[in-house]
Amino acid sequence: MYDKLHLGTHDNVPNSVFIVGPCVRCTKEYKIFYPINKINEALMMYQEGKLIQECFPDLDADNREFLISGICPECWNIIFPSEEEDNSLAQYMDPDCLEEINVIEEFEEIDELSSDSFVGDDIYFLPTEIPTEPDPIQQLPEDLC
Image (cartoon, rainbow, N blue to C red; front, side):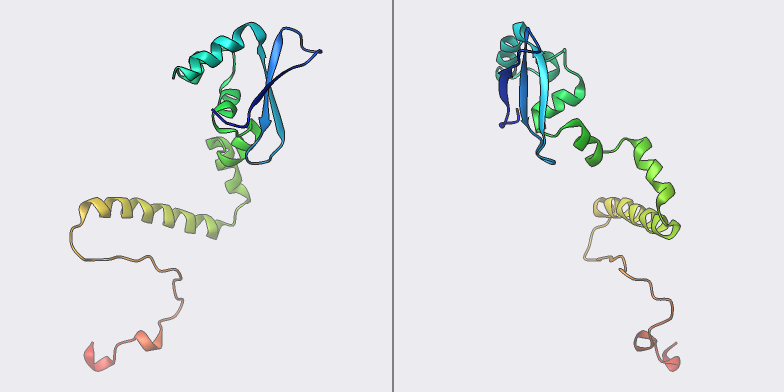
């Protein structure tokens, strides 16, 4: 469990405690309210090694994640956007940039395969820049072709 959490009570929210701590990313204080009659049991279960969803079944996944990692839901969505949010950003990107991203992703897939499939001293590098014209220094003399 995130080690910067504290428990407290609030007069305006009777019969509950709040669990509060700073988000590790944005440092804003984040509070989770939990029924006062369930908090002791939940904390004891967690200390015994039970899964957090078993200990805090009344909390949604976002709040449970904050208890584990200290990342508030807003920052979690920034760090790990949903697939829909991730794809929606593509409309704002330069098409050339998207093409480069696809090439890199394809190379990473090939690289993963090659590390398991090839044996030997062959090393393959992805060029950082693709030249538009041949480099005269690297051209072979015509009599060797």
